[in-house]
Length: 61
Image 1: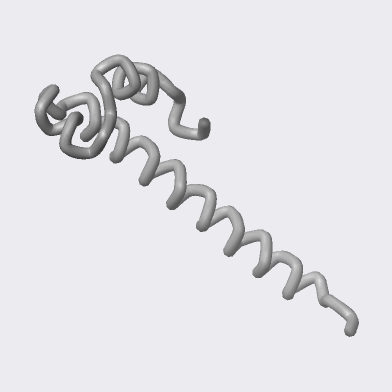
Image 2 (image 1 turned 90 degrees about the vertical axis):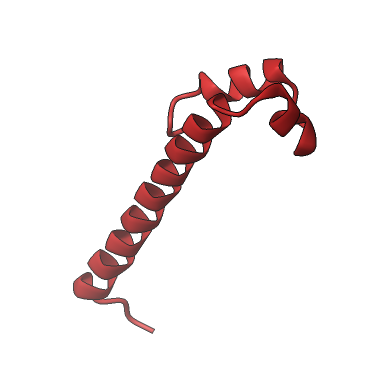
């Protein structure tokens, strides 16, 4: 099967879109996590220290 340049570009565009969606989700999730109370973090099994560590990560990590 021969892959055309157009097909290759389309695949890269989809991959880029997927990566950007993941980065946005990471940013949003970490921002929300930083706002949770100790009790709320305990409900999901995360300590304040773990939440702080996760919250400090860059969106691409």
